[in-house]
Length: 303
Length: 274
Image 1 (cartoon, rainbow over the protein chains, first blue to last red):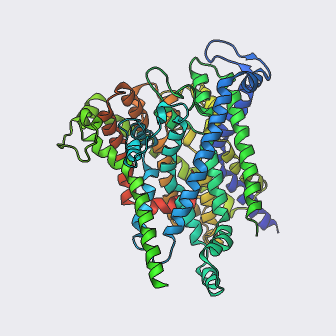
Image 2: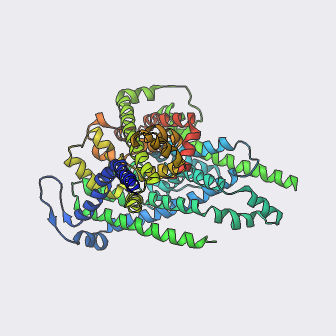
Image 3: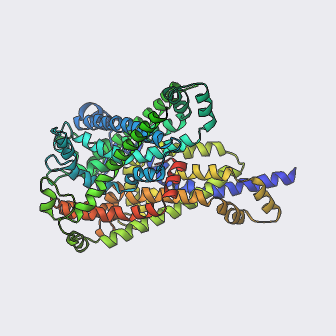
């Protein structure tokens, strides 16, 4: 008995030793900054020589009732998230289902091609799409013209700019979620499909009653990742909507996202307090949406 | 029955092929435009292939920007991040998978909780921290937010759980020390997971943009995405140069991907993280 206690005591010490590097770094770069984000959000603080001034919840009040740019950023970010996540997941799922059909040839080639945009640098392809979406000579409207249609003004038009950013994001992310779905599909045993076929189930029935429910964990994972990622929109907007006249977020703030708002408020001129409150709102939004999603989606497909 | 299947099969290939064209077209357009002159890019109807192969755009990019330096910086930051994340994740994953100790479940929940606190939420305090530690405009500052990763710990824990504990107990009975067991028994058995995690971390590091944008103030420390955005800002109307610089930025990781694509795709499939 004493010996066993000795072993478990040693085990405990070693476990803590092995955990120490990760937790020291988490403390330094995640937990401590998170606590400070809350703290900063209660102050007015132009970083540098000026002192911090405690303002309580003023920053939040100003954000949520008084700042139309932040409200716009909030709406834009939510719109972008919905407008990218749903099409991306639907297309990725469709591609994965097609690629997963038995007897399909060149499966590996297709999988590679669909995945290529994922490994491209986001900044680089944002520049490419900025040109592709150019209203007069851009490739996208060129395709519209092939069908005799007049394409929209995309990034130059406040009503279409965010759609342009969303289009590029969908293009880039489909392959990523396709891989998640393919991995999920592989865990579904073939026997189930054989049994369904014996029972005379139609393709559609098989998809609705077998594939989708069994793929539920992958769908939940993909939706949660997609939404968290969508709410963090920054790089595409920064690159695609910047111009010499205006850093980014245009035209007429139609593409300003929450993170772009945070960065612009924090660093032009330096102010750590007010944008920290915006960061906390973003944090709350991510928590809320993730929890609601886990609930809803789980219930929907529960078997 | 058979002929309808064939018809359907053709339809599936057609759909997949169309999708593949859409996936590749922007990148092919980028490469072709990088070889064209500016007036040729802007002509309508557009030319498909460049009238003549010219490398002038690339020459301008290489002389007007410090591309090789950006490339090296990106590699330095990526290597630092990969080494740190592999080290911390495998050690912590091992502890969570194979040790019993007070507070284990709570600590593991804490790890997962960090997933709910994305970098963008912490960016301002992280900037203040980097400033307080004197790390602004340094490699250490560039890599600061990318040294530890909850997904990595989660992944390593899953993998290490599947290793039979007998192996470790046998080594312990032979008098092997715990660090020794970790290095010579655990690590060799989880190489595939380490490779997946390394690739995943590399992708994330390679495209990191917001943090370098804030932290790197001297061009000597610019990483590729930052160098590209700065270069394109300088030549805002020169689409030809932008496409050459973009091609140079996309190419390195694309080549690595095409060479090791199986590992990439398996990596994403197993980590599932972003």
